[in-house]
Length: 229
Image 1 (cartoon, rainbow, N blue to C red):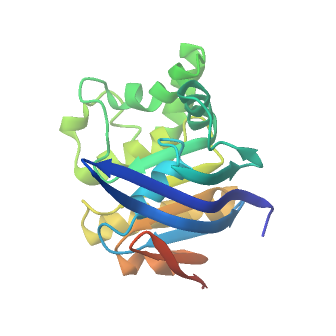
Image 2: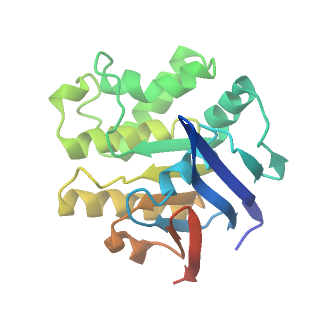
Image 3: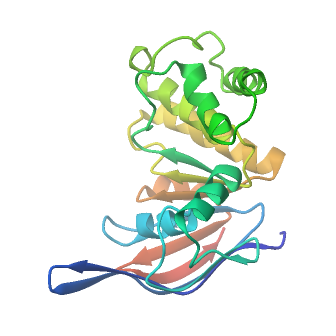
């Protein structure tokens, strides 16, 4: 396996709820190598989505260190975090998070436009990605005109727009039937196997574990164990 890409050291995330403090993560230590396929599993409220938000530069830890590609991102400002998110990380969410007023192609182009890529280049990349996920006949449709599986494929195409190093998927098959879910996971596995992408899936579905090389079990904000499959 490759070099360490993500390193979490004594990571804490504490939320203030009135006069009470709630620790969503408690001293988490974890390393993820470049090119690994990792599943983070645990029950609802275990802290797995909090950990994903921290790895994905969507939030900052209360204390501890996050290194991404050796850079300490734990104390960066929002503009710096946004730059890292925009260039290095692709997100796939259970709720798809597509913009309903934009076409399929426009949704996929959006991350590139945030990076100020020329419209013609962004459009070419978007069309290529939509063909890759089998939606080249849906480019001008709105999200409301697609099935759940098609919307998730748009979300995957969008996550690949900037050719990121890391794909973070939060319950990516949670709203899909089993056949469509398998297609999505096989596609992600292909990105890992054929293109060397680092894939991190956050889930409570034990059926997804068979796709991963490393399985991180989290409960009550702490890592219980790490298994290698």
